[in-house]
Image (cartoon, rainbow over all chains, first blue to last red; front, side):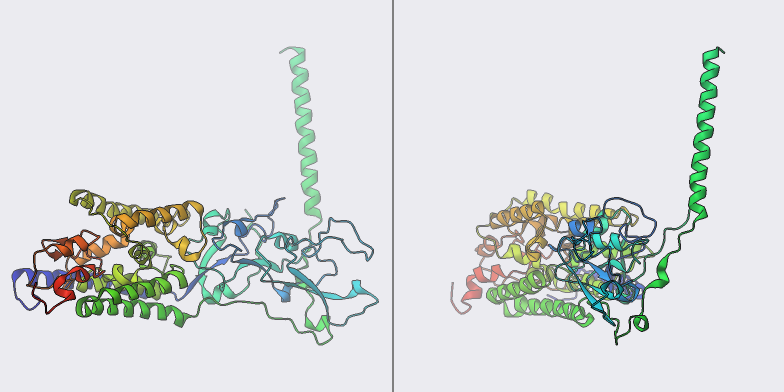
Length: 207
Length: 321
């Protein structure tokens, strides 16, 4: 069948050649435009929970509720180098709860108990208020509800905790379900390396 | 103006004046005491002492790039194997094995992503939005099955596509859809393709990826999903028992593209060339209504090799029938 030289076969070959050439041309244009591997990431400077100057009573939980992964792919991340290592961390303790015998708030803020508190550096057991503390977030427990992120925001905290997409969990939806719900359009697609650098929250642009 | 009116007006003026004064005093106070942000006060290693080292921030990396390349290689290999199995080996059982393997890998292991069907939208956006680009892997996944279709027809639909494989494996008692109805329903996929492209090429804020949002089987692949989509997916599977591959034939937008390109295909499924029995068993065996006048129609044929399995010439080549 393919060996026959007929008007139909020649015409078919010509059309096929044209189709492949146009497919190739389009593919070439897209390849030349490509920027490498792209992943979703939370832009901390846009996120309602971490962006400075944003005043709202309620914490935004859309990252937890909208993600298609059962325990959201978004996690709170403590950028240790920017952490104040406070004695009473507003993201670790519920600072509105009653003070206990040791002079610390009696309740923790995280509903999933995902934050661990450890004294670091020179530890003086006699004077705990004078020590530095590391706050370590448990990846397995955190579901990115943003309570600690909001509490860590200035002026109480230094804003070292931000929400971040965990690329090992994220299934990389074509149209991220959180991005369609996010009121501040804070979920963005970035090249991998850029997405992995934890960014500091920027203040709101002055009008 | 009466006295009462004048009094009211005076009262209003006084009130406005008072509110303005209090307001400006308030803001003035806020401006007078600038809040010093303690950004620089985060204690660093030397302040903390005791040999403390700042722990690194956990940054799990996405799936390794070479694994994504591997997906493309496997896609190409699966299509090559499918062409060989259907055109040379002509064996339904091996095609079924390939279908199951691809369902396991592209479906349940890769959880339905990355897929050429959804990539239609990304390609459409990348072609229209100067600020949007897609990785080379996505470009390859979109174009490979199309190029193969220009030579061999809908090879991708047959043994490779996980959505097709889901439906392929549930075909139980397929009915022959009347030609005209089949043709009319087949036009739906082009309408869906057009709607999906229009929804995708909107400005970024209003952009919507309908094909992914209404993917009926991705919920099964991920073992979790919205209840309504799981129901629709289940509905397609139940329907698929009696109507062969309803999603592929009537709704799949990528199927529409492949079907269109398959018209110029060089080779396709051939039913025992030049020695048909004219018995019509192949046409009866085809659940997709793709056999007309003892010939597989390339734009409809889904490379399942059922016609070979049903043909007395194929199963028992030496016998005199």
